[in-house]
Image 1 (cartoon, rainbow, N blue to C red):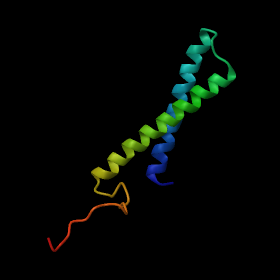
Image 2: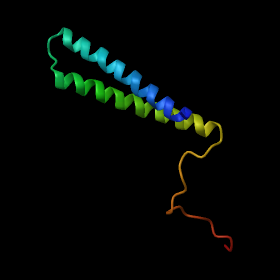
Image 3: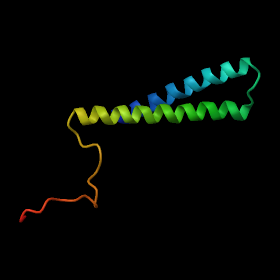
Image 4: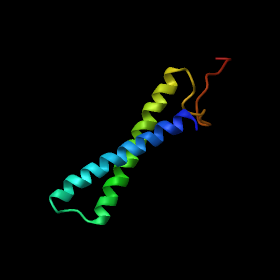
Length: 81
C-alpha cells in the first residue's frame, strides 16, 4: 500500500476514533441517537482524512514531487515576446 494512501487511512481512523469520543461525551448527556452517533463518527472521519491528505500533500511538495497535475487552462509565457 502506498504511503499516501496509508496516511489518509490513518487520518480517517483517527478522525473516526475522535468521533466516537465526541459521541460518547454526547451520550453521557443523553442527547444522542444512532443516527447522530453515525453522523459524528463519519463526519470526524472525513475531516481526519482530509487533514491527513493535506499534510501528505505538503510532505510530497517538500520532497520535490508534483502535487497537482498541469492545468489545461494555465497561462504560458510566450517565447517571442
